[in-house]
Length: 192
Image (tube, rainbow, N blue to C red; front, side, top):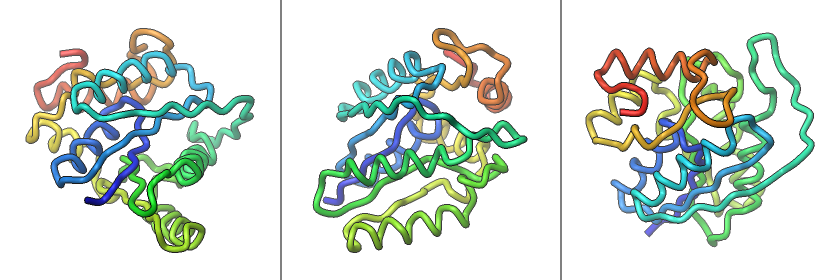
């Protein structure tokens, strides 16, 4: 069986990613990175609940004192590259995949198909072709992931998506607005 390390935030996309690989018979482990994000505590709590639900393990990696560069679009420059590098450095199988639940439509450079292609090439080269990145939803939009979750009964109610809060979802940040828009549209509400 192939091993996959899923970079997991406790949100919808990474939870869908976990289900995706479990349903295909992969040995799934998760890695959550604490990089000082405001929502670390509720993210970790959601991830613990998701991992308990799927009976899989998780590891938390902590990094401190990162001074993020923020683009005009509120994009955290280099965030996914940093997460990917941490996952590559912490991959403890002889070969396999590292998966990220990134998707199209965000407008962020480090979610683009070009980023995915180049990251995969760098990972293969630096691991001597033992490890590759996989982006099962790389060309999907958020609405496609939400539909996938509904169709496969992925436990969305266990997830957390907020950029600004260290407890309950703020309801105002881009992640909350996106989540609420898609959840309402498809009949499952936040926290249901």
